[in-house]
Each structure stands twice: as C-alpha cells, then as structure tokens.
Image (cartoon, rainbow, N blue to C red; front, side, top):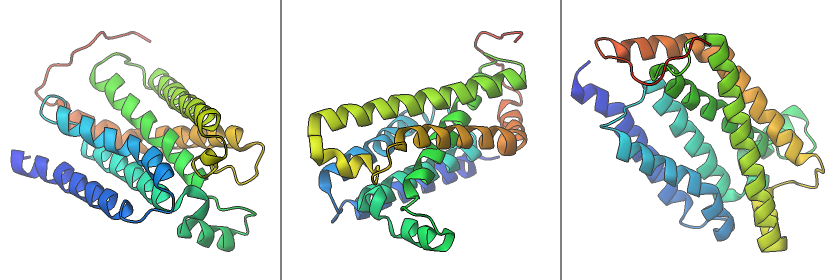
Length: 217
C-alpha cells in the first residue's frame, strides 16, 4: 500500500469528524452539555493526529474511532435524551425511553476494547488471544466506570444543570445499564471483529519488528 493511499482514509475521517463537530456546535440544544459530550471526540482527534506518523493504527480502528466520535457529537448536539434517531428507535422498537444513550455506551465498550486489543497485540504485550480478549473487556469496563465517575462529579458540581449530560431519563438503574451496554459492546467487538482485526494487524506488521514486553499468557 502506498503512503498516499494509507494517509487518505484517516485524513478523510478526520475531516468528516471535524466538520460534524463544527456543524453540531452551531446551535446545540445545551451548550454546556455539548462541550462535555464532545470533549472526548476532540481529544481523540488531537491524539490521533499527533501520533499518526509515530504510531499509525489499522484502518479498521480509524473507522471505529471515527464512528464513535460521530455518535458522541450527534448526542452532544441534541443531548442524548432528545436525539431524533433515538426517538425513531423508541417508536420502532416500542421502548419506554429514548435509547440513544444505550448506543453511546455500547460504543464506549466496543471501541476502547478494540483500541486496547490493537495496543496489546501489536506491542506483543499479550500473545494469547483469549487472554487479550479478557483484558480488552476489562479495559472497556474500566473506561465505562471512569465515565460514570465523571457523570457523578458533574452531578455534584452542576446539580440540576447536569441533567442533560447525565441523560438518565428517570431510570434509577441508568448507571448499571450504561456499564452493561459497555460490556456487551466490548464482548461484541471481541467476538465479531477479532479475525478482521488480526488480518489488518498482520498486514501492518509485515516486515516490522514487534516491540514491547511479550507475555506467555
């Protein structure tokens, strides 16, 4: 693959995410909520741009990260409880609430698990695929737990002003559901995308020495 073609996909995805960010920020439903929701997307783009030359990722991972960013940006523009797509799903599936936040937390498990998998396998930190899958799921759950702590701190600091950010919609089990969806997302990623991911990593590692600290686990 030429350098030009290898750069085209991440560059196009970055432009798409930045454009979506700009459009979503023109007139969001709640400006504070929008900022809090899109910060992870902004940080992700910044990190990927800064590390692109030193540590390029597989195309699959770039696509998944971009999709996750778009989910965050879309939710930030409307707030998760008011996303039009969520209302459509609510009517179609007969749910009692807007389920868009469930999709957001599914992605919050799916994508971090894949990021962890790429780092662990490319660096040869873990050789066993089953152990890698277990650790990736653990990482995804840790990310989800940290996000729930952020939501708790936001509630303490902003009080009622954090309602749009929390998006609980009156569900007393919202935190548990959020972490459950992250778990489902991480497990889905390991079950459905591992083979595809392995092939992309193999292509990327052709002719390149592997670093890190290999483990026999």
